[in-house]
Length: 444
Image (tube, rainbow, N blue to C red; front, top):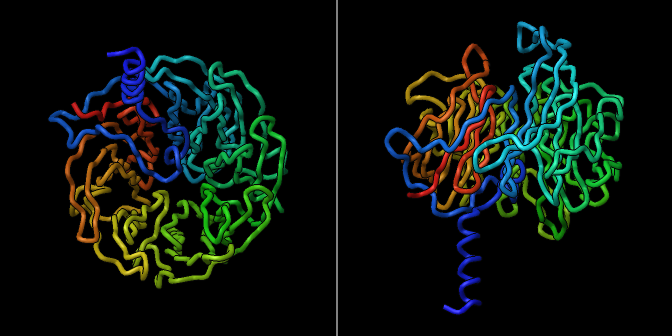
């Protein structure tokens, strides 16, 4: 074998070994698709092998994986400090938030950056948003509005914005939870306040580039960019309307009124062809049709029920739905995993097997996340189970299930795990309020 051919073979082999990154919320393309191959078909007896586990503090924030490192945020209460007895109460608890960088190979801590943070929010477990990693930097958004840019290699702070102080606002009830979006030189974030519901910052300096929209509450929905009508459109759903903006300037293209009770605009809008689907816990869903020639949208259909218990279509809370081959898959308000036709909203089937044992009674805010890999789906649920399944209009077909983590948080008198894992390097990286683990999902 000549030298040139040897180098080419080595490069291909190295790429295969290295695997893909998961550098932000929902993966490299922010679409909840895991594109690696060589993934296990079903779990072995006793479950997949755990490569490492590392102690961690509290938080709902999922990890990001990039360049052989794992980035995750957590929260540590000050000595003697206590959270309110009720998770719904808003107190004032001395804490610190941390950004930790771990070695992907063994979980060893490479660096830690921390800052003091008084927690005033409801459900105060810890940070909510997944770090964003790119161009040698990592950006994190804490529960109380600390927007931080760090050197990804060393953890040295490059800049920080305190959003509450900078914009004269209070923390949303459940904290700052809209995962930041990196777009070119812009870091786009939900902020809040008059005219600053969404703000674009210079990713290198933290300087404000533009601000847009006004709403009584900013909500918690991750911003996302889709192409439609010949333009790149930044979709921002706050509790009063779904909005399309020019991501470069913040100019509003169009707005569609869509009220979210209790400020719960949360599940990220999903696009399928010329359709844009948005779903709320209390109000149910709306499907918009995007114009093919200009930035514009009209309502195609809506849910007929506004009751959280008696739902006709899909009432999502935390779980961002998945749109695939003309159908919608998602978790309804009480844990019903459902399939709907995208063109009409007709419900085709539902099951409780995803969020709990089959036949179990409904549970309010029951949750599972949906990640596609090839022709299958990996579904981490709130009980700490990872499920491999096939989803189709014909029904739910479970292939395999493994219990990976213990649910350590509480909601409605039950233990839950509400953290979205990362899928990279043929592994899953998942955390609760006590530990973060790396589990191999590679085909043997």
